[in-house]
Amino acid sequence: MDSVDKILAQWEKEKPDMDTLPMGIMGRLARLTKHLEQEITQCHKAYGLKPGEFDVLATLRRSGAPYRLTPSDLLAAMMLTSGAMTNRLDRLEAKKLIAREPSQKDRRSVEVCLTPKGISTLAQVLSSHVETQQRLLSKLARNDQQILSYLLKNWLQNFE
Image (cartoon, rainbow, N blue to C red; front, side, top):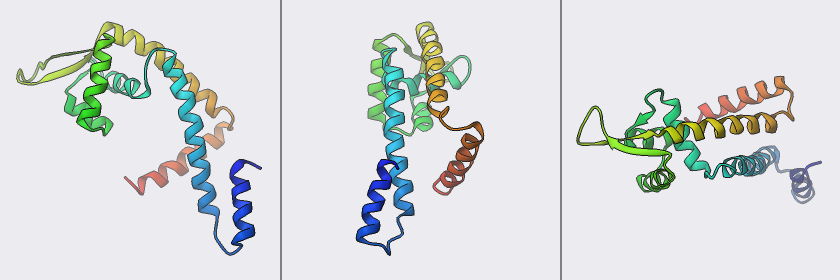
């Protein structure tokens, strides 16, 4: 039994006619998310980054060389408010992991780019990030991971 089973057992006793399957799924997802986020946060913290800062660096890196995007493109890729994005960019610039430079396409705007320090830092943290994800999922057999991925993808598509 897990902690959610205890809650469901209490509901079964109090309201035996209530369908608690959705409650169990949602409760387990919420609890798993909390545990997984704590582990990933610890991974990023070891490199002096917050998860949101890692997301900015990773978004720039996966955009391909020369690893630069406009703030608007970053906002669209990450679904943040402009205020939250500005704060993240300010912190990353202070750490010398990104730079804001005049746009190569439009001199009226700026682009955010990874610095050499940002590229090397991200290479280290990305390796650790992926290893942490693999470790966390290693508790499930590979086939179960594939089934879970398929189920979550199908469910997510209903919202997107």
